[in-house]
Amino acid sequence: MKYSTLNLTACPICHKTLAYAGADAPTLQAGTLICSCCDRHFPIVDGIPHFIQPEALTGFNRLFTRLYDWFALFYRAFSKAAFAYIRMDEETGRREITDRLDPRGGRVLEVSIGPGVNLPYIIHRPDVGEVFGLDISLGQLIQCQRYVAKKGWEVDLFLGNGEQLPFQNESFAGVFHVGGINFFNDKKSAIDEMIRVAKPGARVLIADETEKGAQGYEKFIPGFRKSFGGKRNLIVPPVDLVPKEMLETRVFDAWKGWLYCIEFRKP
Image 1 (spheres, rainbow, N blue to C red):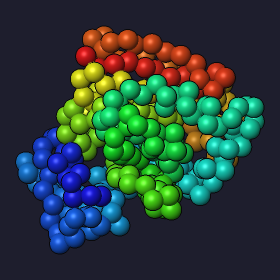
Image 2: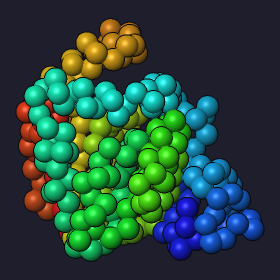
Image 3: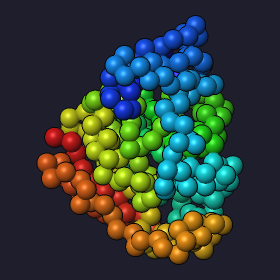
Image 4: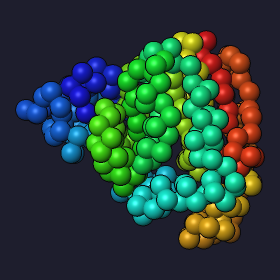
């Protein structure tokens, strides 16, 4: 994490400012972030601030963190295979969502960035400023960190829970999420948090598998079906959890109906 990013971070619990304790400026590869209000401490490990302790997670968050940690090495290859299966070019599919961002030169946050599969389609856009990524899976973030280092891209990464984002209010001109919210413990908190950290006028995009896509996962991802003990709920896009005051709210199908995308603009 860059030292200049520090003023964007906040305690994920009380949203107050964080101070850096360490001697590794300006890159903040190690050290600790300390909340100015509640005195919580968050370690920085190999340049990634840790805002959660995976062993303290519960419910679906704990379950899917473990699944995505295990899946991290294969995620990129699986993504390519999945697009081949639905007979769609991956760039076309990913741009169906990322091209809807409208940051106007501002910062962009991807919640659940995974190994960085969406980065090639936003990182060089002239209307995109700095890019930031958060994920609940350390395994995914390590793969993403290696990927951006290989590409020579500057992307600050954070280990955190999408339901408690570690950023200041109104920090990002674009916020998006592709894959995961269907099985968050608290979808409403995640949506509210994406809204909180978005600037007024920012467009927010939230996409995940439709029921058709979830059934595809059950066929091809080992252990996915067993994770629910045969009790998985039918997938319904959580558009009803988007506050009524949001503007231009709509839901559309992406990836030939394998994904839904909820789109809205913060007033």
